Amino acid sequence: AAGYGLNVYLQLIGSLRSTGYSGDIVLATDTFDKMPPELKHYLTQQQHLILYNLRADCFKQHGGSNCQVQNLFYNTTSHQISHDVRIHRPFATLRFDVYWYWSTQYLPHSKILLADSRDVVFQADPFRNIPSHVHSKGGALHFYEEKMPIHTSAFNMRWLKAAGYTNAQIDAFKHKPILCSGVTIGEQIAMESYLRTLLLEFDATQCVAHGCDQGLHNYIYYSGKLQQENPATIANVTTYTHGTGHVINLAGLRHENKPLRELGVLIEEATVVNVDGSLPNIAHQVDRDAELAKYFRIKYNQEARKVEAEYRALLQSGK
Image (cartoon, rainbow, N blue to C red; front, side, top):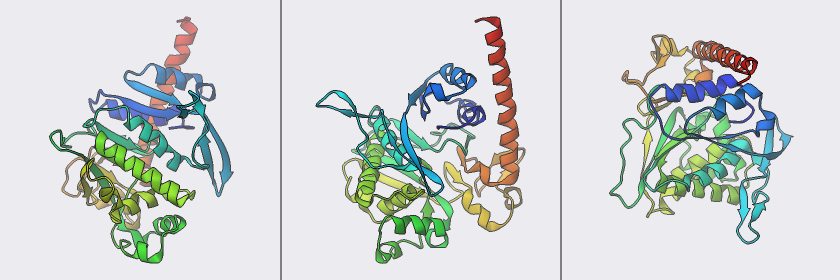
């Protein structure tokens, strides 16, 4: 969650805490010297918020930035911070190195959510109705579909081809639904294996296209590699048909050429529902619908102004 304004952090953290969730929130952010002071103040005042201030070496490429992280890796021989072991890559791919390290800090059946930051809103505790497998040898993973087959998305097809997969490899699953890499839930023992498998797939493909993380995510699942290489740690992987799970991905609905309210997905003031009317815990890609995007932009911009005003008052009081 780097380079964003206070409103984005308020949407992410505020909507999550409003569900009653009181566990850890772990974020990778800019270093404090790059943050506005009111944002630094807000973040450092939060309970159970663990911040990793990452320093990155980046260069612009094809409309985005490819980066190496400067303060994440550690040399166990020299006992010093080490240079990034991987090539410059998009932040969307680099984050999986960070995710993997974080996953190693938790107990085997701890529930872990990996989530985008800018376009996520929490509507209920993210782990509500997600079963545990504490008596299983492995753990569970939960993947969430988008409302499009892979072959109908030029972007998703491009990412798979950029990774170097052959037409035959892609043809084997291109009619399957897109699995979104932006939000994934699982137990630590399975999540660590998933992340390690995805990172090793990056090492094999060296795919630096922006969005390639989703191509790798889909390939390791649909090819069977994820389950075949981790039988002892991944007990099962559940994929959820779009509009039926704990997470609803909204981007694919743009191809319906109707706003979410007309589709019956958006109800009341700003509540997103599944196809059966049930409440998904997480609404993802909320900025893809004009009405929903406007609602949250106004809501969290107003909250940001309040936090900024409180911070200025605090400074003036000398506290």
